[in-house]
Amino acid sequence: MKVQVECRGEALQSAAPMLTKVIETLIARTVERDPELDLEDLELIVVAEDYTLALAQLTGGDAVGGEGVVRAIHGEESVTVLLDGRHMSAALAGDAEAVAGFVHLFHRELCRIHDARIRLGRAEGLAALLDCDFDRQLLPIAESMWAEYFSTRRAVWSLPASSDLMLNHLADLHDALPPSMQEEITLHLAANDLDALFARSLGRITHLLQTAAHCQGYLAGLDRPLGQLSPELEQILASGFLREAWPRLGEVLGQLYGGKTRSAEALYAALLPEIQAVFAALGLAIRRAEDGGVWLDPMPVFGATPMQ
Image (tube, rainbow, N blue to C red; front, side, top):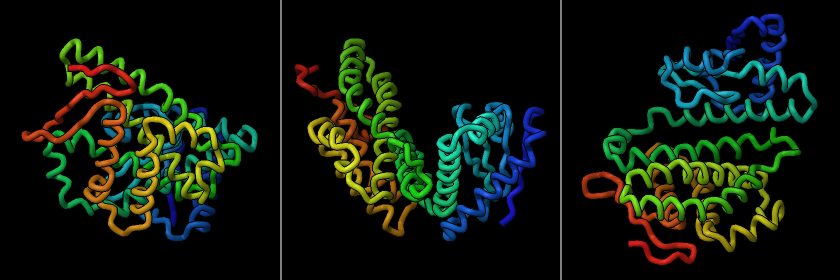
């Protein structure tokens, strides 16, 4: 396969031949190691000195979040990958660990491209989901969880030896979220603003679930249980609010990975109960209202008194 590489920015021009060669080598070695990786639609890789500007140009200003290191931009017929040229140059000029970190980020994005293109066109019922406010709000959580799990599991062989698999970050979230969520529930109930409560909780719980799926993917790819790598975190999760959700999430994601049906609807149907369970574990019961909206029932958790 032949992919065009374009370097944008005056500071990158002198290094353009070297950066192009590095990218071509990375793709060739990745495909050699993983020949079933579907990258046929990858046509252009843009290495940009100004990542935010290039992202706006490539997406027409529609992209959410202008920061990052690497991002695939999917068109109807092809895929473009945007790389932060400053980060790439700094990583390649750094030590072996920095180089390995960049290689793994790039490899993970290639895995995301494979998954997205494989699933493209397999969403016959997606329009119906997007027409319902409840599903429209929660579908992106399921898709982001799957993207994290699939990419970390499939790209595990390029994982730097020094990586902590984001287990430390998961531990931090596990400690911080229960008290912060309880505070949010108390404050928003006092203000009688459940819409704002849902909006605030949505971002936090999405990040938690993405992180959990990210960790589960690495653990599955390494074929090592959490207890071998972090007995402390295993004990924390086993006695905390994720004690039931954590093992179930790993089982569901593993079944999806081993199955053949990965449409948006299938992923969502499998992961929705797990998403709702984590909301409930943090004090928010959510369900689809009769009008298709989000029905929110704040619940007392973590030893709090009932809130009516």
